[in-house]
Length: 258
Image (cartoon, rainbow, N blue to C red; front, side, top):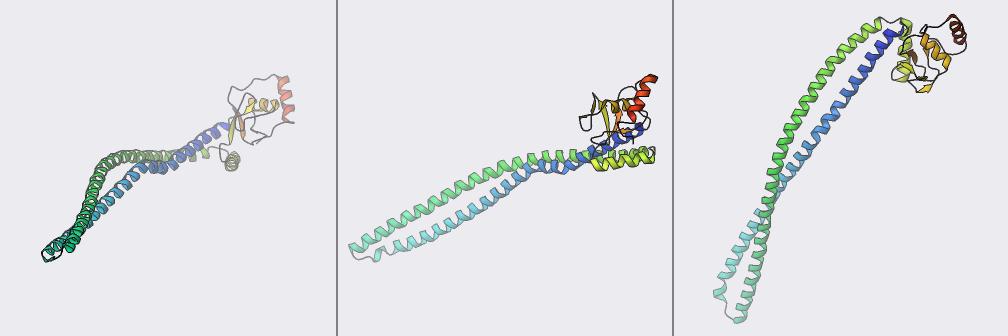
């Protein structure tokens, strides 16, 4: 590998780590929201159940008051029985009492249904309160872990950025400018290895002459397709004088120096 590329590769490693850290940090709020969602849902169910209990209790009390008013009215009706004079009036009175008793039964049934509803809703409240408590504990633990992860990542990012500044200072100015241009245009790594005849940046096959130039590591070259700086991961190739002559000729025809 060219001695010029070593500091650039180190710089690229740091750049990639910065991207990784920022990507993980970017997802932390979403992970926190996802972790909190079951708690929010359960809290909403609990709130709705409590409101439903209050509504059912108010409804029961309304029916109880209606029953009390009906009972008072029925007692008044019964008190008039002594003043009835004819059998027809008495039969009408009995019919009214029968209707009153039926109506009282309706009120009592409504009260009973409300009581059953309140009991059921109160059980739901109790069960949901237990669930909310468990979810609060789980969410608090998850938040604690995510907060700690955010703290660790923020500290690491500051460290990596400091190392990045140091590494950038060791790179030739022209190479650093070229590196930054490629990074800005591609939004990813500016350097790519050559392996099995491919540029690992774009996964396209590059000309054999260019591969030979990259192997020799006597200069910097770029991929003709993705324009990334190329480097050879293996040992540099020792060439004969004849091979060197041919390679120099290839340099005039293929590839581009940085």
